[in-house]
Image (cartoon, rainbow, N blue to C red; front, side, top):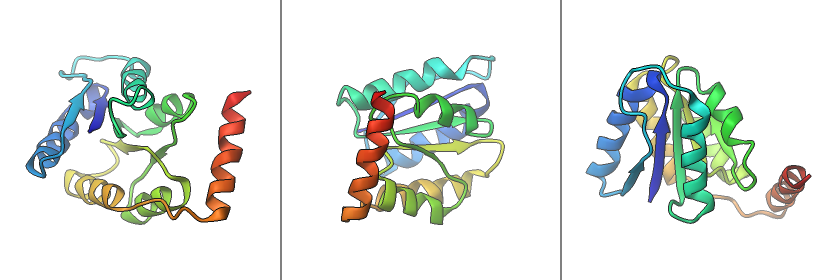
Length: 146
């Protein structure tokens, strides 16, 4: 299960991504927003990250204009490793090295076809589970526990 959410600038891209995931028989929890009426991104980010922390979803996707705000909001939550990606290489590496559980996209930065390629790469990639990466994840977790 994948949780997805966006602010007003990401509605069109979110809908495209949902269709793409559903075509692959991937279940999606859509936490909004559903219109282009201005809204604040932190609340949407919180719904998606809560879904992951509570075990309702395995991964999340967050979308705003640049992706920066959603990244900042999501990474404030203990246990969340959100990565803003604008190319397939970073999508693969953040999963492989950081075990990222939230993909963040900037709707005003990348086009729909690139967003789908980034998403597919993120979903197809897996954590390398090497000692150095595990050590770094533990260090990150210690940082968020203070």
